[in-house]
Image (tube, rainbow, N blue to C red):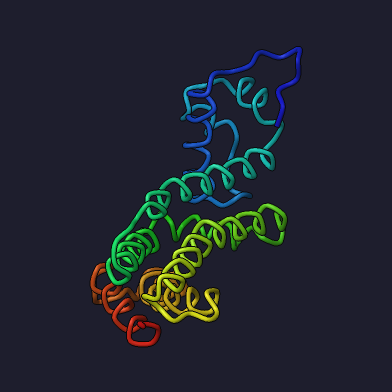
Length: 206
């Protein structure tokens, strides 16, 4: 949001501190339970400063989710530059994706977005659309390139990308997500990624 011209513009560190502590509060307490005054206090700013940067709790929540999506994009950004033979390139992606999706904090953000979707439908849809682009888009582009070089036989990159990511997501993300972390994968993320790539190469390898 734009800061009104008659109000001071606050430095990025203050905004970053507000978003950091607001994210923790929303993840811990949900939208309804999170309070603006404690968020301001924990961020080391006045309540007046918080309301000068964000008009209200709804605007702060939307900014927190957008900021989380930015973080996720940065975390996966290095995967775009991976090169080498198809198994090596796919393993690089799969391992990074498995580590990312197995992080308890990542699940907590997804839980928050899912829980607040009825109230913040547009915010939630932007978050999920960005996830598709940041993760699925990167993998689909890599699959197209490997198909063009003859390393893989992939007629439908979107289907193939969904299959590889699904083999990773089920044990490291969805199973803990739906069980409240009571059930977790026995294998570590690296082993899950390696098994997924092996199965994928058996299906799509040239």
